[in-house]
Image (cartoon, rainbow, N blue to C red; front, side, top):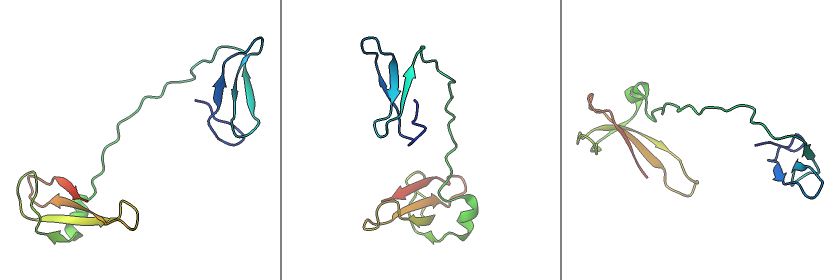
Length: 111
């Protein structure tokens, strides 16, 4: 993938036509880059899986409000919760829970 050095949009590739070389061109501005040789891959970048950060960390559990919510995993009746606005402002908030049972500590959400 190549990007336009002028405006930053992704360049489009055009196959050769008659005696003209193939080229990359920008659909927004007049930038054109003629390709005389074969395009080589500069480098391959391996994707690294990131760790999922918990919504309610162990430090947050000490200060987070608690409620009587039944854990869907272990059935424990108490959980810490946090409320976030994950959608637009006219939609209801999303509640994120974390089980307070020491063995479980699973997280779930209610939209």
